[in-house]
Amino acid sequence: MSYVDVPLDRWRGEVLSVTGLPPHVEQHIVTMCRLHRQNRCGRASGDVGRLTGAPARTIEESLAARKDFCLG
Image (cartoon, rainbow, N blue to C red; front, side, top):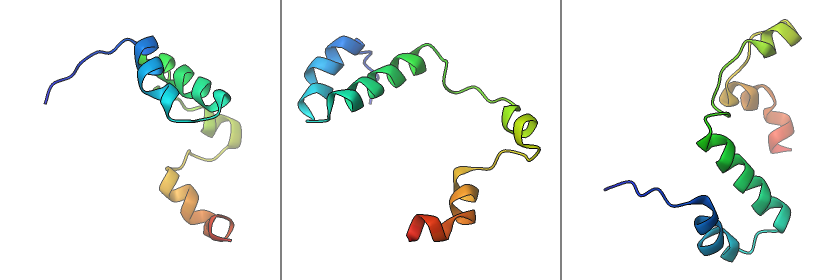
């Protein structure tokens, strides 16, 4: 397997645009891809702890704590 760096605009036109997603969802995905490419969305910080007084939880911990909400 090898990695091929496909330009974002080409990927959007050839792959994403044919999925039938609403335009606002497509734009959100493109924005997240741009941020990821710029290494701007994978940074950890201590902001949650500073703001809430409690340490951040994993998604698994958060879902387990609100299982009643998630499952109805």
